[in-house]
Amino acid sequence: LEECSSSSSFVREAAEDTTNSILELANGLAVPILICPVLFEALHSPEWRVKASALEKLAQCASLHPTHISRLLPEIVPTVSSQVWDTKPQVTMAAKSALLACCNTNINPDVAPAIPAVVNAICKPNDTVKAIDELKSTTFVATVDASTLAILCPVLARGLKDKLAVNKRSTCLVVENMSRLVETPTAVAPFGPLLVPELKKVAENVQFEEIRDAALKALGALTKALGHSDIDSALSAIMKEESERIEAEQKRIEDERAAEAKREEEMRVKEEEEKKLWREAMEAQRQLNDLAIKEEEEKKAEEKRKKDIAKTKTKSAGGKCQGCGLKKCKKTCLFAK
Image (cartoon, rainbow, N blue to C red; front, side):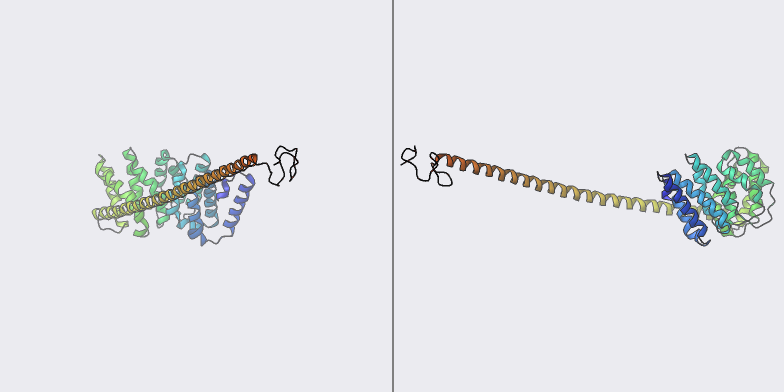
């Protein structure tokens, strides 16, 4: 996947062919434990080609292994939805295509006709009302599992925040109908913090009594789906879970900061040691240079001294006279004794 961002087109094509071959040969059991984590990690890459390729491969997995992808929708939908707002249009288009392909793997026949509208609403918030209208006309008969909730809840939470009260009422009706057919409390538990607080706001703040009643009915059905006896217990449980999640997140951030501070301290100590060694090396080199200069000066001084001594002597180093050139001077030589 990293090579999909190579500057060479040949390398990019080879990387694409390789990843396609791997996905075609991979067993379906490798999708949740190996392939999807790698694709999710690739979405954090700074290279847009890597992210676009990872999203395309996710869509390919949806066509090759729809059952396994359907089970992973609670993880896939929020991860891929965040890529819809990427600055690169190629990544945005790939994210929308991957999201639609993954959501189409959902096995709930009641929601299937509305999936294109829901995916479009996730990508374009202005189309949320259209998706709510599609869901409002849906008759829920089949059991609603976690993958179905992963598709619907982001749009429903946005519908509860809509400015128009009539759209809030439509959303409440959808939530009520959906909550009555929830498979297990564990399936809807991750989405409780997303819907319960917003339903409570609608039930308390909207001025129309009909809409408040619809919100209370939806809140009661969702509370029962969550496995709680009343709304207050559901809210307290959600607040407790939310506070625990926040505490865990704060602890994680603090641990990351502590680890980062430790790394920075280690880097600082390492830099100080490197600077110290560099200074010692430079000092040793300076001393060696001084010794070399001193030896050169002493050598030159010795040569000069020898030349000066040679000038005061009548005999050369070979024992010959510097005047006549003989070892024993002639009587006519100036240096003859």
